[in-house]
Structure formats: structure tokens, C-alpha cells
Length: 271
Image 1 (cartoon, helix red, strand yellow):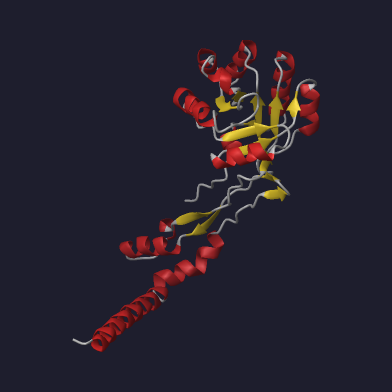
Image 2 (tube, helix red, strand yellow):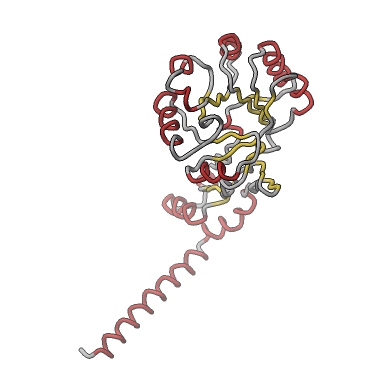
């Protein structure tokens, strides 16, 4: 068989596959089940909420939900009829922003998060008794030393770097200590001032960087003046009364105090 015949056969085979695939797609697109899917898919769409970006800072968004056209068709076709209960949804993804500073969670949800950088037994007892979800950021040099104390805390433990600096030298080791001892991923960095070198380091390890104001005194007054959807309160204090009254004030206003993972979660439980 000469090379021209081989070439001809290859061209004919390729055309046959192309033609067959095209015919199959036309048949599927005109199937009554697919037609009905196409007719209703826009009505089932939940629009995603894009992050609100201010230069190098942003408020997180929320994924949307869209119909998975192909999977819905397969599922319904296997049952032999159109059934909206068999509709398969998928998330319309909001892109992660590792090269910007998070300054808050979505404004649509009446949720806030509290970060503590000190651990005090009296405050911890109050948190435990009231089942409050608190985030602790701990200096990496203290994680191993204070493991016994930290295990007793009611809350999630996160890496606060070494002297508030995140470096290649320690970041993996400190994150591993947290994961193995406290069963949560340390997937956030924390800053009170912008530091682009730190932002680059955290981004490299797929850690999102939170930037927020550090409250050292007048905690209740600051809370009253700044309470809003998606707010992150960073408290560097052992003032039991101020922290207790601030937490009670937040709850009295109908807000839910949640872990950072919930506040900043972009996922949407599409059915």
C-alpha cells in the first residue's frame, strides 16, 4: 500500500469519526430530555458573588451554581425520562486570590470571626461554656512548647509565624505541627500591616493572607463601632470582661461567630 492510499485512509477515518461525533451531538441536543434541560437550566442558576477588590485587598466572594448539562442528561437518560429531581448542579467557581490581602468575609452573611493571640484560662472557660467558635493565632516558637495548653483551648489553632513573620525556614514545620496535633489546616497568614514579601511567602504555600486591625484596648467600643457582616476582629488582650461583653454584644445583635474557615468559605452546596 503506497503512502497516498495510507494518507487517504487516515483522512477518511478522521472524517468518519468527526462526522459520527457531530451527528451524535446533534441527536443528543435535539433529544426531548436535553431540550427540557436547556429550557430550565437558566432558571436554576445561582449567580456567583465575585470578591470585592480594592487594589491589593479584597472581601471574599461565594461560588455560584450552574446546571451540569452533560451529567444531567446522562442521569435522566439512564432513567428514561426527564426528571428535575435528577438535575446535576456544579459550582461556578470564584477564583482564589493568594496575592491579595483578605479584609473580610462576604457581606451577604450575618457572620463574623474573632481571632485571639493570647490564651487565657478564664476567657477559654467562658468560650467553652458558651460554645463560641474562636480562632487562635500562635507564634510558631510556642506551638510545640505549649501543646498541652493549646489542646485544651476551645477553638482552631493557626500559625502566626515567628515574631509575626512567615519564612521558608519554619512555615512548613509549624503548619505540620498544627495539623498533626490540632487536626486543622493552618491555611491562613495574619498581618496588621502590609508586607508584600510575607504575602509572596504565604502565597507560595497556598496560604491566604488576612489583614485586619489589632485591638489592644477599648475592645467593646471598637466592636460596637465596627460590627458588620463579614468582619474579622483581631484581639490582642487578656481583658476578660471586655472580651466577654464584646462577644455577648455581637450575639445580641443577631450575628453568628464562626471559624475563619466558615466565614471565608467560597463554596456553595449545589445540589
